[in-house]
Length: 408
Image 1 (tube, rainbow, N blue to C red):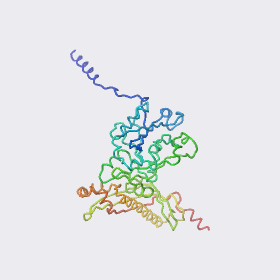
Image 2: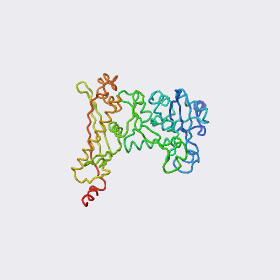
Image 3: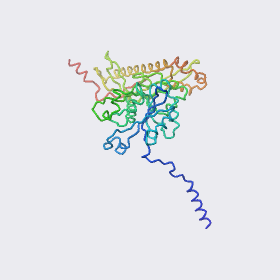
Image 4: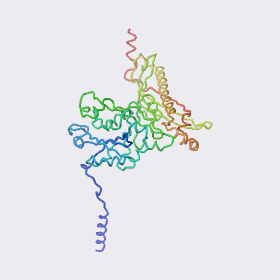
C-alpha cells in the first residue's frame, strides 16, 4: 500500500515539473520573414527591410496555382541604432511577431559594406537562436538592400527563393558566384589566413517597376529583374573590390568551387572556336617553405566534354584532342594567374593560402600571420599546374563543318 502511495506521489511530482507548451506561439501571431535587407541612412542609423510571406500565399501554395490574389510577400521597414533595435522597432508597424526560422537570405548594401563593414552587423543574427546560420549572405551591388528585398520577380514569386536559385545556378553552371552562408562568412572573418568572398546581386531595370505585382505577372519580358553580379572581396570586414567574369572563375578554380563551367579556346585564328564544358574538377593547394620563404603549389585536374565547335576539326584524331587539352590548360592557368594577381593587388588572401601554410608549418605561420595580407601575400610565390582531359566529344566526332568546307 505504501508503495502505491509513493508511486502516486512520484507521478504527481514529476508531472508538476513538465513545462508543457509554456512558450508556444500560434501561427496567426507570427510574421514569417523570408529575407532581410540591411542599409544605413544619412543619419547613420540602420534601416532594416523585412520581406514577410503573405499568409494567403502560404495556404494556396508558393509554387502552384490557387493562392491569394495579392502579392506573395509584404515588406516592412524600420530604423534603429543597431540591428536588435531595428527588429524591435518593427513592432510599431507589424501586427505580428517576427519569426526568423524560415529566413533564407540576408542582403547587405554595398555602401554599408564599404564604409562601415559587415563585421558589427552579423553578431545579432548569429546570437539569435531563431535565425538560421545557413541563411545565404549577398551584397547588393549598385543597389540598396531595400531595392533587392522589395523586388517582385517573375517565375519564383518569393524574391528570396528567386535569389537563392539564381546564385546556385550561376555557381553550378558557370562557377562565377560562390554562395556563402552566415556561418561561413563569420568563420572566414575570424580565421587568420583567409578573407571572405560574398556574391553580389543587382537590380536591373526600373526600380519603380520592381515593386509592382505586374512585374511578376505581366509581360514575358519583365521591366525589372534580379541578376547575379560579381563577387565582393572583403578585407578586414570591409568591401574593397569587385571581381567578375574570368577573374571570378579563376578564383573558383583555386577554391575548388567549380562544379561545371565553360572554357572557350581559340583555334586556327578563330576566337572562341571550341567550347569545352567542365564536368568535374579537383584542386589541391599545398604550402611549404623554401629557403625561409613560403611557397604555394596549386594543382588543378579538370575533365570535360566538347560542347560546340565553330571551325572544321577532326575530333577522331588523338593529336587534335591533345592539342585542345593543352589549349584548355593554358586558358585555365591564365584565369587562375589573373585571379591571384588581382588578389595580390588588393592585398587580400581570399584563397586561404595562409590557412594552407598554417596547416603545413605552424611555426612559420606564427612569424608571418601579423603582416600576411599586406606584406607576405603580395610577394608570395605561387606555382600553378593544370591537367585537362577531353572525355567525350558529343554525338558527332567529325563536325559537318568539315564537309561544308570540302564541298565548296
